[in-house]
Structure formats: structure tokens, C-alpha cells
Length: 384
Image (cartoon, rainbow, N blue to C red; front, side, top):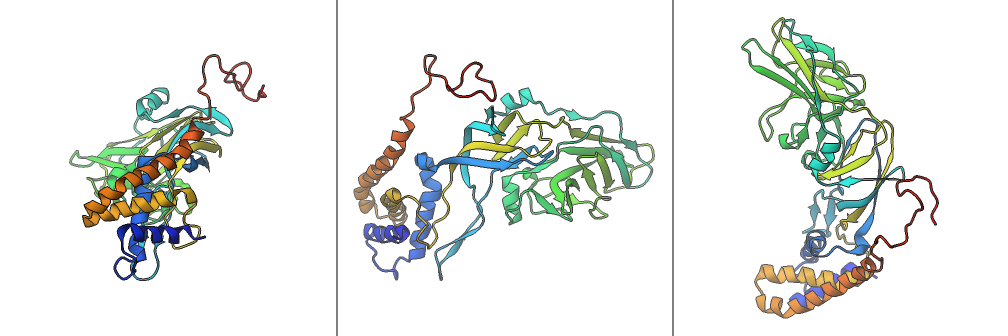
């Protein structure tokens, strides 16, 4: 049974357009996608979309973007179109585990950073100018937390690759999507401040090396440094702290060159924050750990396949939702009003399935049975 075909047929009945010559299947699929991908999760949170998101951390990396679907094609033949990157999950929530151990989950920055403050480590000058532009020196503390490019920056590259790697700076990323972790400052011959930061992008041959850049005004004011990028030019090694940089201008002899970075002793992460579609763990992991979070799945796009619709009970709801959008766009308000009550009825029926499951679990109280005996924070104790 091809539920997508059934939905298209039902939409045609609702909008009274039985022929593909007047309203194409591809146009109907587009409306189906817009309703299912954009509207449904905002209208109802379905239990069937509740799932588990799992990923492995990378040593020294503290920020992980929400994953994106690859570009997909909706419909077939003439009139088909691409659906660009969009989040695989609608959001994350408790419970959260790291290697099976429960950890607190935060969505407010002040609560998270009050426990794990981001102090910028910057002490004595790392070195002084010698009249040239190229220098090698070490960070004041290392390993250092690397810079980060958020999900919007990943989308801007046109490639679903995270983290971003290359042999030069990708200047298609908006400046507002780059969060530097290493700051190198000095002054030129005219006493103007010269700033170089890391870019949240990494060297192709070794992702422990961050590519340095010259920051600028938004949206695309930053630029690559002269001299190219390799393990010995214009990179910072986050693990060893070694910096090789060619400044945009020569630095006069004796001028201080200062460097600041975010430093944390790596270890087992004990907290997770979700903000700006990014998961941040503290402390940064020293090895790979399994992170598990509860999540609401964003449905994949409807393609012209028999498996496009995973849940048959939603078919009429999806069809009425897509037809509702089409009727409103064409200004057929009489039909829209006539069908609105039936659309609302289907929405209640779809939600009722989730509501029964959500309400089947008793709310925990002081007098409820505990899952574990003894200390609630104990690890490895058996269930009662």
C-alpha cells in the first residue's frame, strides 16, 4: 500500500481537482511536505516522533551541532524540487546519559555557565614582535577548547559536513555563525589593534589543527591569512598549544603579542547544554563517550516511494492539512470553512493516540515507588 498515493488522491477530492493537468502531483507533494515538516510539530508533539539521539564525542571537542538531513528531492520529473538541509530532530530534552550515567540537561546559559564558567585564559605576552609578520609560539594553557561553527554556518557551506575541514578558510560562512576559541592580539606600527582568531574550521589532514583567520565585520568580513594553511602555517594545535601565524601586517620590534584561549582540564562530561541548536558538554571529553538524549524526530521529506508515510493513522490528517493550506492559498474560503471542523477532528484523533501513552505513566511523588534503592545518585545498583 502506497500511503503517499492515497494522500494525494484524498487531497484531490478535497480541493476538487481530480486531474494532474490542473494541479500536479508534485505541487500536492510540496504542500504535504510543508504541512508535515513545518506545521505538525508546532501543532502537536506526537509520541510516535519521540526517539533517542545517540552520538560519540570526539576528544577535546565540546560543541556538537544538531544533525541535518541531506538535501532531498520531492516529486519526480518536471516540477520536482529540492528540499534543502533541515534539522533531523525538533529538539532535545531529559533524560540524558553519558556512557549510561545520568547527567543534568540545561537549556539556559546562565545556569550552565555558572557551573562551568568560560574564563578566557590570558596571562603574560606569548612573544614580542621582531619586525616581521610570521611567528611561532604556544598558548598559555592547553589543550584548548576549539572554535565552533554553528548549524546555520554548516548550512551556508552547501555541504552537510560537520566539523568543516579544508586547506583554506571557507568564506561562505556568516561571521555571526563563527564562535572563536583562540584570540591572538597585538598592535601594528600605527598602534592599531591587530586581531587573529581561530575560525571553527579545521585542517583536512589533521582535525586537531584549527585554521586561523583575520576577523572582520558581519556578515562576511573575515578573511584568510596569507601564507597558506598547513601544520606549520596559520594553524593552532589545540592539543599541544603550538601556534604558527602570519599576521596581515608586520609587527614592530618589541610590541607584545598576546594570546587568549578557553581552557578546561578534559575528562568525563558531567553536564550538557542545548542552545543555538548546539549541544555543549562540560568538561570537554578526554576520550570518546556515548551521549544519549531524548529527542523529537522531524519527519523525513515525502518522496515518491511506498515508504514515504510511516504512520497510516495520520494519512487523513496529513491530507486535510495539505488541502487546508492549498485552499487558503487559492482563496477558496467557503471550502476552507466547510472542511475546518473535519480537519480539527482529525487533529484531535491523531493527538489522542499520543495522549493515551503520555498519561499512562503515573506522576512520581514522595510516596511513589523508587526505581533504585538507596542513594538516587548511586551507580551500578540493581533495581528493586
